[in-house]
Length: 209
Image 1 (cartoon, rainbow, N blue to C red):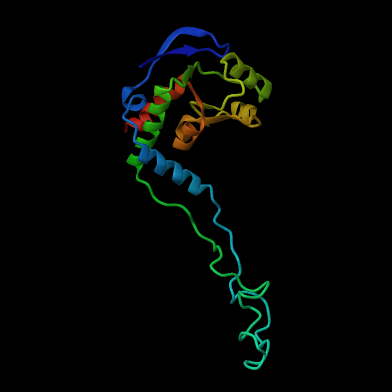
Image 2 (cartoon, helix red, strand yellow):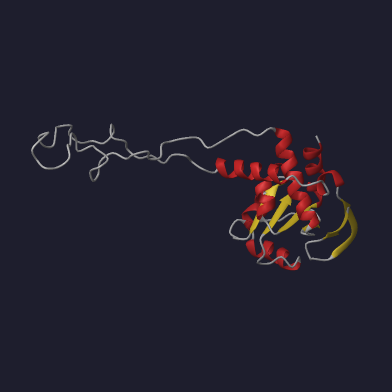
């Protein structure tokens, strides 16, 4: 598959990028995508929610009233979950939501996600670029030149670039990630994928091995 390469002015260059069919034209595996996205979202959860159970509530353990003769049900302790501010029944406890996925499945999920974007013609290849300083207006101008202003866009850069990252950080619908950190969730969550020319080889090296 061949795609035109654009510059930051939004103009086509004389170069073309060849995308690997093994990655961008693979048979999509929907279940692999589901599991990888589920893992990503699970890892975002802190798992620190907690409620106090009956044994942890700080109240007296004295018996509230005599056992018989009151006309009501027996009551042994104010810690009972039946009373206001008593212990909680089956409340959340600290836990780790992480689960394991093997590397081959994760790679299959990313190949599937990239293939879907290729099928949708939602991939644009951009010439590698640098920014002298963090400047959101300059980054917004690049997106505008590419006719992606206001659209949910994922920009994949070859390496960590703090100036580009800081320039895009305040934009709600744009995200910048290095090629090494490209995830299935980020690919599927974006409507448009902008891949810098230097990122293509890194993506292919990662997903072909």
